[in-house]
Length: 225
Image (cartoon, rainbow, N blue to C red; front, side, top):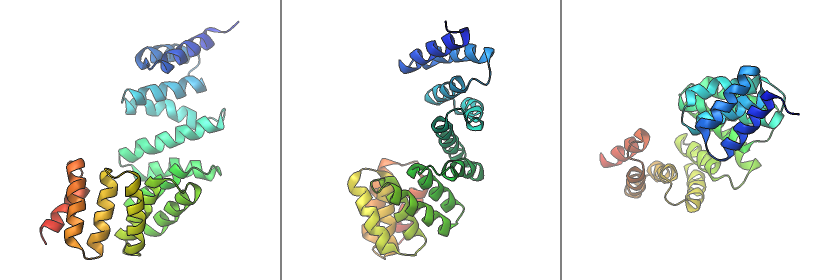
């Protein structure tokens, strides 16, 4: 016979799977009232809160999961989510810590390496950023986000804009309307001195994502030339 805690968790899971996140959280809370360290209730409540865009509220539950070793894969998934949450808050060092937790386990997670590459780029540590981007792509050659990250790093650093352009074009082929990838191709042409072609890509990227300050900066630069 299942306990009340198990019943509340099971009921919450059913509601979660039905995308009824508000009601699911009520049942997860009931399970957590009985045992606030319930691993799966914390994890699913954290996910449900993320689905409802209540990101700050999700952190506490996901941290409980991160500190527990009850289920290795779920624990690492929680670390990934926490890494992304802190990335969006621009708390770079905290985000890095969570992604590092994932890769230090030996788990070959291409997404974690790609996230680390982007974060080290923000810290202007191109050496580490490129190492992580290459690792992400090595683990998953069809990770086109990682391909675009590596392209951007090679271009922005000036290490190898031509090679960066090759990667950027290949990533763009997979998603021709992606503003970040359009911006990367534009930056490559800018670095290579082809301002008019760069402007075309920046303009299209800006049309897709007009609130992005980096894209606007690139476009404004070409307009001033």
